[in-house]
Image (cartoon, rainbow, N blue to C red; front, side):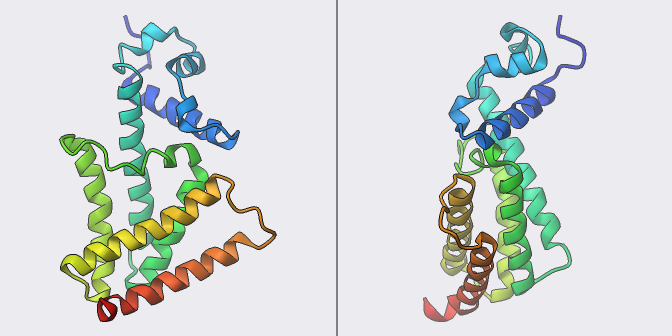
Length: 195
């Protein structure tokens, strides 16, 4: 009989907290184990199998949870904004979410299984937001797709280096990020004219 209060959502939320703690201590997402999750929940590993079908299923759950949570943070930041203001707000929300959830952030990178409907839905929510946000720059077709990749790669590059401890020089990281956001806005303004 499953432990009272234990569910797939509880197991996944516990794993999400744990993977963030692991990341803060310098360990990667690969350090997450079912044994650690079971220990945190005060149960034996077999009890987890009543709620998740092993580590790959738990990792999928973490991926979906992380993508949806990051997407929600980006969407909230974009509400009531457009153009340059929306780009800056979404960029800051992206960075803030990743700083708060450094372990979960690693689960947002991969496109995931294209046959996985839930993954496609989670990814589509973020993509739809970015497409709408970039609409202010009159981008369409391949130009819009290139701009989406540019925006995502720019943010991901900065944030993954930051969360991974890649900035060791004695220069204010916030200053660098503000300049990156300003350069991103300038590039998006010119995007359609330079293709």
